[in-house]
Image (tube, rainbow, N blue to C red; front, side):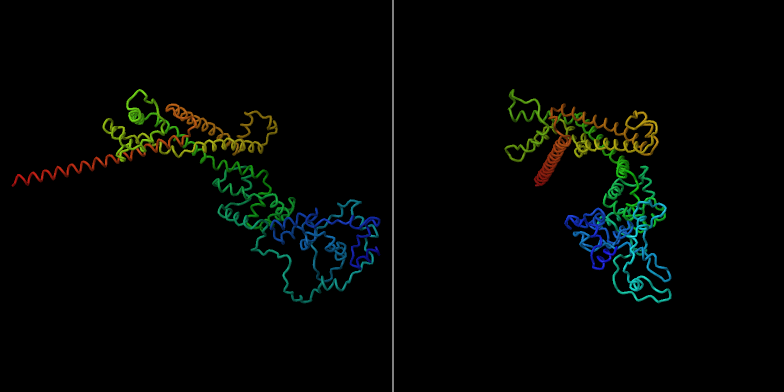
Amino acid sequence: GAVRQALQKGGKDPGIIELDPEKSLSSQIDNTPLKDTEEYGKFFNMLKMGIPQGAVRQALQKEGKDPNIIDMDPEKPIRKQGNKPNKSQKVVAKQIAPKVARKRLFWNTIDESKLKENTFWSQAQEQTSLQLVGLDVDNEEFASLFTSPVNKSPAPKKETAPDVKKPSAKQKIQLIDSRRRMNGSILLTKFKVDYKVLAKQVDSMEYVKAEGNELRGMMQLLPTKDEALALRSYLPPIDAPQSEIDDAVVKLGECEQYMAVMLDVPDAKDKFQCMVFRADFEQHTESIRNGTKLLIEACDSVRNSERFRKVLVYALKLGNALNTGGTSEEVKAITLDSLLKLAEAKAFDRQTSVLHYLVSIIQKNDEDVLKLSEDFVTVKAAERVAVDMLNQQLREMKNGIKLVKKTALKFTPNPTCPMDEAPDTLEDDLLELSQMGKFSLSAEAKIKSLSNEFDNAKSNFSDLLDFFGEDNAMSPEAFFSTINSFVSMFNQTRDELRRKEEAKARRKRIEEAKAKNLAAKRSKQ
């Protein structure tokens, strides 16, 4: 004890006498940087995450550690930066009779009845070496620093900024990244809801009146691993009174409050994904159903158009007449994209295209064929149907409903049979016990029906390609785009020829009128 006091008076570490004098000092001293120690490393990580110093100090105090430790250099060992506060001095301070007002140390005490015989605290009461007999303490200095007569007017405070600012009633404790907090607060302010109510709805996967994007945004605001660590360090223990937990949550910012409430929801991300799937389900099914319907109708329109068949026959005859001059080398079939070549080929007058000539022939022989576009109203819209995207969307819905069923079953109690051994009929019965389970059964049936309709549409299109002798690798977008492009050129050429004929008729009427007037003048003479 005397040697320790001598070391302390000399400003040296009294713990040095516990080292082995036969070994070197460097081999027995922990040179681990403060930020990498098991005891304090996580608190410096919290600072690195951008968590305010005040919140980190509170976390240190909650665990009974010196909050001023974060003022030290994290890159150096703690032994090289001065000793930690001597806890034994706190014991002495506690024994001072409370005859005057004094500063209080709000520490967490241990119930003596819970201490075992071999604990340090039992030894501290029994061993003489731990009684700190003869401790050198300047009582006057202690009294001037930490005590004050009750009737004495308080000394004027120095204008120094405190290390830790206690948040006022209006200030909120901030524990997460500022940009994430700002974006999250905007979303949560727009979606006005009681977070506790929302947490219960998410936990039971109830229907929430919200769009898929809003639910997706709230799912992205679920606390990360580091954010969860920061929140749990700040919040009281789980077994603390609920009122104490609620008071701590209220002091947090908007985004942190949401995260704190969601901490206790098991598998919150999976449950949110189920809710997002449910919110988007009708929109996605309608998109696939509309695309499927358009594809089927467009296939029927092209296949059943008598006018289009006549156009193909007229084009084939005209092309053969041009290419072979009526010999026996005529071709029997052409691809649909060959129709687009008709507008490119010009006559020797460099003005009349083959398409002009084709339309004029049709106009002379079968004027009804000029109404071709009336047969292809649905074909125009079918060009915008992205079949690959619909196929991917349907595949994602099939995978999504599997997750929904799995999650719904996971949180449905079944005391009689393990879920991995449950037959399908039992699974369906269990799913009927929850809102999300009932939805999954209904959605699965709709997806199956939708998949059959989509397969039927693709089969119809494949048959259509075979019907016209087209390459089976051609996509619906390319097929219908080719037809729409030809119909557009066909209509433009038809309208152009009509305008020319109308202009020719006007000129003829004018010439006839002039000739009539001239004849009348001559008869008068």
